[in-house]
Length: 132
Image (cartoon, rainbow, N blue to C red):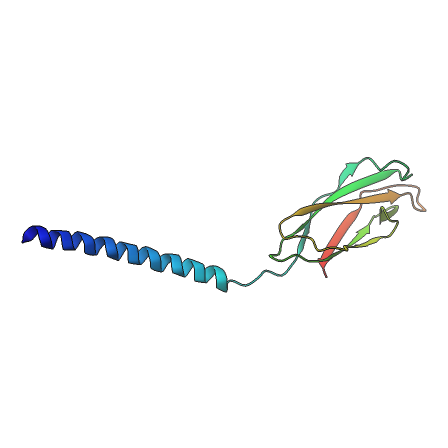
């Protein structure tokens, strides 16, 4: 008779552990479903000097990595400025608005060119981006 109660005790222990694991798994799944979506916000890397595309005619170009830190794709608007000189994107506009959403967690490269302004000098541009 003792071996039967020992077997029952072992089965009971195994079933209890399996039940605890199932409850913990369910709690994790519910937690993942309940956590809210993070609104889109964009991180911009430091400017990296790059060669300007052929025929551009600008003395300096810079590349910026723009990453959507949210959990959903989002359109983005970026504004380029420079302390000296005139900063613009390759389409000659100081404002870039994406035509397609930036995917969450993916880094896209944007090129900014800087032309000499009235001061006759070129400096490193700054880029500010926001979700639309």
